[in-house]
Image 1 (cartoon, one colour):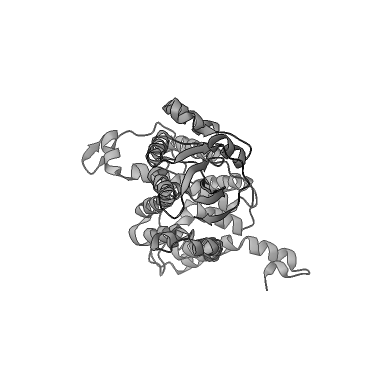
Image 2 (tube, rainbow, N blue to C red; image 1 turned 135 degrees about the vertical axis):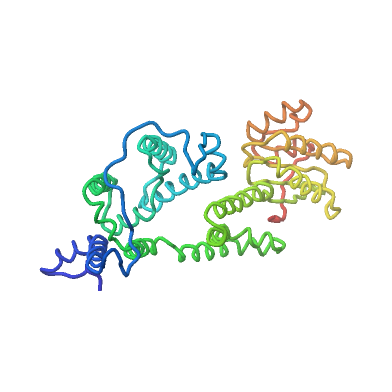
Length: 396
């Protein structure tokens, strides 16, 4: 039974006991450690002395002394090494992750969060503060304690300032095990292993039908699994450390994105037009340089395979919103190669941006970009045939 489900006279007291459970645990642990303290010796590992008072307001230091050696600003940056990049990166990722975890369906403005994070660190530098970011542990504890708005941050700030001024002598008796227990019990529910399993199941079922029509191989199997970056990042952070783990996780996601952009899915239609074979190719996304050679191989493979006596190849570009110069040059080379094999290549209903790229590459190439309402009108205009078409569709 949950405390919130209890009714009657005890409902209100138990409600506040439940909300204050973390504070009660810390206070109880502190009192217990103080009572068991014997001439500075304690059975627990304690937090230790905390300097009282607020730090002085002054300019951030641009030099420091380590041992007997004075280090300038450049030497400090060199000493930090990859931390110069990894610390801001982790801070940005964490502050956005915290907001998404506790947004409860509301949209998160990443730009707003970055500005707030930058201002916090900029102002904190004048108080000799460490680099800060959104805290999963503190946010989870606040959420578990009943905080439901950003006003909780104001209350936390006031309590922290008052504690630094008046309560630092008591901090030394707080057992680290008590703090660890509070953090663990608040954070354990943030690890959504069930969501990872659900992501695996949903994506695998969504790809099941597609996978039946695609040649099975190691790469296509695992690229259909959204949970793979999660697993790789999790184990990399646990085994190799947070900094390297984050880099590996980001790299895996970048690899997924690059692979998907370099392998655009296309629908292939073979139309029999009064004895002439028309090949219709429909890419489903914008085209970038990484997809150029893959698209060329697919066009030439289906055009020159010999299974069908293709006379005209039509590429439907109504899903292609953009195209770079590398793709344009590759498509132009396809035109030339198909012309050598007595086949015509036509670009049908492409968007303004890729059409403009084609015209800037050359007027002869740009003239191949046509717009008609139907494929019949296009074939009639280009091949001089009127027909009604029927064909089979092969999904790739």
